[in-house]
Amino acid sequence: MTIKELIEHCRGKNLYIQTHNFPDPDAIASAFGLKKLFEQFGVSSTLCYVGKLDRISTKKMTEMLGIEMFSQREIEEDMCSDDPIICVDSQKGSGNILDLKGDEIACIDHHQYMEVEGLVFHDVRKVGACATMICGYYQELGKEPDDLTATALLYGLKNDTMNFTRGVTDEDIKAFLYLHGRCHSKILSKLEHDNMEYSDLKAYGTAIENITIYDNLGMAMIPFSCPDALIAVVADFILSLEAVEVSVVYSKRRDGIKFSARSEISDRVNAADLLAEALKGYGDGGGHPFMAGGLIPAEKVSELGEDIDEMIHELILSHVRWAIAPKEED
Image (cartoon, rainbow, N blue to C red; front, side, top):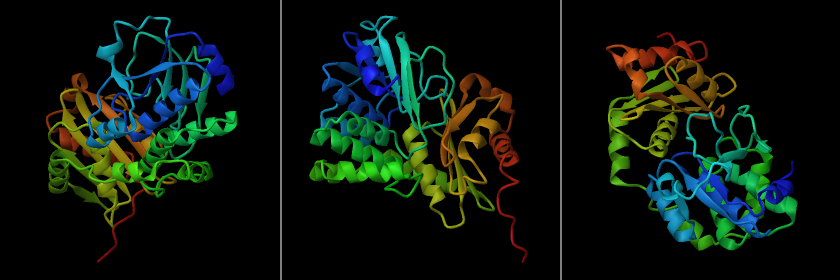
């Protein structure tokens, strides 16, 4: 099925577009861009998520671009079991998106493909941002995004690739060139500034106090609850240290222990494989070769033993030790 056929498949139905639980700018941009594309063909939809918008950057993005997104609590009474759901920047079974009672019929994602039965459409590609894929649909169908949609897509693209320094492909570059002349530059500039909160500084400070360096692997623990996006930002920060080529950050939360991993040497240390293998039997992990997330659910944390931190370090090291650089002799 093509994207045009998917649009026709959804015509006349109560369509939902779902992001992962704690949507980041790329997820929000991709869902919004898809919604606006469908509208050009007379198909309406509702943007939704199960968790919450937990970062100042995402709240500012939805406010400035007029993006309406609804939590599970706000839509669950209206959603029926046969209402179609398109998962964007996520796939069911990946560990970062929970089920709604509708019918998942499609996924559009740039993470590793997970086999799911019952999908009428799936597009999973190795690109730097899901927004790139949505941009491609506009070009494929001969449609133009309005300036706010183009701004959202460009912001999501820049955010997920760290301003084109991570996981960039030729498709991402082409998407940038397409969107750059169509976006609202002043709004984009405002979105990219003043995005740090006090809680961010607290998380940075605690991570710095708890960082441990094993050759070129940097690990840090945040002993209090942090949102997914903030843990990822701290992992990016640790990766920026000169000696670090692989970073793993984890936060102890009510729902369990949340992980974020980054790798600059993905040919040797695949971040998605690292977390998937290290957490096997305790939780789940996945994502990209260069960035990934994972979770040990609360009910499994006790199985880590009395010294949780020591066990976590050992799990990570046992799956990365072969690839990290040996220490130089004095």
